[in-house]
Image (cartoon, rainbow, N blue to C red; front, top):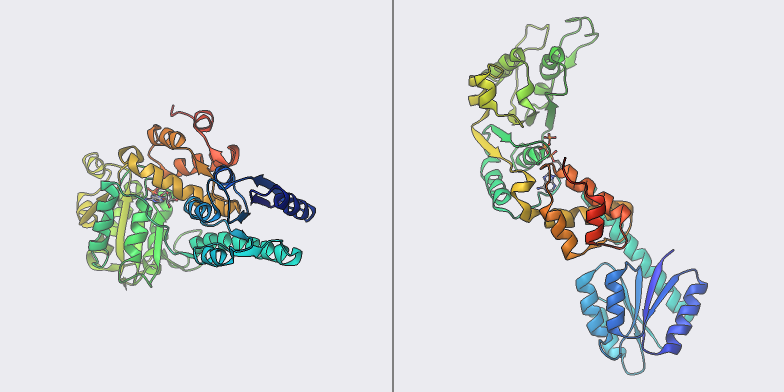
Length: 387
Ligand SMILES: Nc1ncnc2c1ncn2[C@@H]1O[C@H](COP(=O)(O)OP(=O)(O)OP(=O)(O)O)[C@@H](O)[C@H]1O
């Protein structure tokens, strides 16, 4: 059911509007002045607000300013009495959705409210859609670590330099690779991703280089590998530290000569591919342990971008929480929930594993289990400390 907040100092007007709108199936709350209205507005998500212009304490225009500051997406319809039409027009210029005159004309009132709700739904929907169609998720963060990464991306993206992205699980390594591709001259060609840890070692070569029909038992037809698929574009080799030594030798050749051979084939195929690799391992230690080829390491690590763990850039946590609140609430089709300062501080100080997916899950959990505003008790109750 849609929620409407009516703010008017005249009890009779509130009563009339409230009766009409309740009859139409809306859930109504009332406030007797702008101050009380603003308090309610901040505590709860309304679909539409009806607000008188002339009121004691905080008047309608002041309310409008403050309400738009708190949540610009909620449409505010001004109720204009005798002599305040000009102010109402002014209010519309300042962002009020529309105005209606006192005494309210029933039809106009209902149509205006319905239109305002439709617009509100559209705004939420558009935001959610925009995010879904945008090619790469925004990289959130103002910490020194993230600022440096963004600067590096801007510098290296237009070159064909190979990049090694390092960092713990889920810190945003893939996002870095996506942005490098997006900002490169290869952006219109494909970005092809291979998770080297997820593919059994006996299949990785066929995955990367393709195979000819009949080259091994399950090779029932010819297959184009990821190197060829990424021709003209970028190949993102995730978890490169888990690649078998024999696949490493072939990747090295592909990088040295710009050529590959399909498994079971004898033809050299030229490929023009920029490689970005990522790992959560210490590759030089893997080299010491004879699990990783030093020559391949040098080929891959022309540029090294290290993505710091969330615990090393806590100042980004409020920004990430705000983004996740907006994204998840938009996906659920509900107004964005608020979070109290101390609750946010609790999240900021929490001992995270460093994985941003964990933070996102926590925000989603808080959205589902908390009231309209997330309070410190919610954080205590629902954010489980790290083992
Ligand atoms: N700076 C950021 N701003 C916003 N979202 C981010 C940021 N960094 C990471 N994310 C999001 O967190 C999630 C994990 O990021 P990503 O997959 O890039 O990490 P990863 O280090 O490649 O993970 P893995 O180690 O599992 O391969 C993704 O949904 C990503 O969009």
